[in-house]
Amino acid sequence: MADGAIAIPGAGGDSGGASPPVETTPVETVDTAVETPVETSVDPGVETSQTTEVESTDGRTIPLKYREIFKANPELRSKWFTLAAFNEQFPNVQAAKEAKELIELVGGQEGWQQIQEKEEQQRALDEKYYSRNPQGQREFVQNLITQDKSAFTSIVPVALNAFFEADPKAYNRVMSRVVANTFAGAFNRMGVQNRLAQAIQLLGTNPEQSKAILGEIAQWTGQFDEIANQQPEVDPEREAFEKEKNEFQTKKQREDEDRFQQSYKNSAGQKAGSATLTHISSIIGEAKFKSLDDESKGDLQRAIFQKINETAMKDQNYIRQMKAILARKDAAAAERYFLSKFNQLLPDAAKKVMRLFNMGGPAAKVTPKPGEPSLTPKAGWINLQKQPLPGQIDRQLTSDAMIMKGEAILKDGKKVRWPERVVA
Image 1 (cartoon, rainbow, N blue to C red):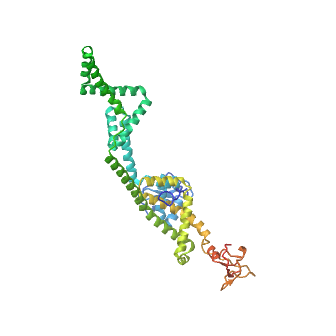
Image 2 (cartoon, rainbow, N blue to C red):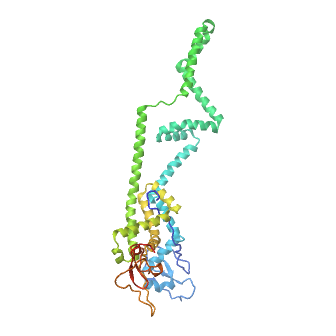
């Protein structure tokens, strides 16, 4: 099954819903229905601009040829105008279903608002990134540091290498400025410039001392190479803390995910199970349904769920949309989407399973022709030595379960049993 759901494929549906024909230019419509129309004296068979009757209050129009129908069925008025309003927005039912699915996919009005807020935040960052403005770029970098300082510091060396590969000349200019500033500060701070001046003065009078000073400077500059090749210092306590924190966060995320999955799976599963049993009852009849034991009901229910799942795994659109909803952690939307698809597939899946169980409704009543024996089962059971031939068994009156038990009703109406439990 797909993550956290009894998988069900994407929406489908019949199309249609064309607007009722209106023979003249319609008057602008509103929502309030009025019971009493203003009738005209125009002959309904004449094509004129007065072939519609006008609602007395709001100016809405309906074809005159439907006048008597609406008079006899007042409730059809609101349905007529509702359908007309629907067709102004959607070309057919499928388009409306797709619009509804899209709304559910983004999480309704609240989800759409969140998407817009995130989009605005991303747009603001993009503006800073592409601005070429030093202040905007500093704000962009500072935002990265604020979000995750450790991640920022770890990616800077990678960015420097990428910088060199992308534009070596620009890289050299920037790094030369860094080196120059670093040495200039170090020379002033460490007195290197003064020591060099002393070494130069002592070259003629005290070469050995001059050599010693130059050795100190060489040792100092060598520290740069040593520092450049140093591995980052590892603080055992800090490392243990980070490991523990990561494990805690991973565990919490897993627990949150499990709770989220259960928050909609339990409710959706119960509603789907109830809908399945109700549908089974509608197929075989309430009386026969009540006669089934709990085990039989459970078997039917599981078989129908499995059939729905088989169909679901073939629908990539449903899987993609469900994953998007689950990633958004919207339990209510996930349950709605799940149930809408489940109820859509339930009738066909149930029909196939019930046919397999030979429970597709009451057996058809067959009236024998004159001279033929009655098909009504005779009282009592007849014991046979072996199973009857398949052609002798009345499959309208004999279920697969009966045959597995070694029982059958023959086409001549006899009820028979046999010791061998062989499926016909």
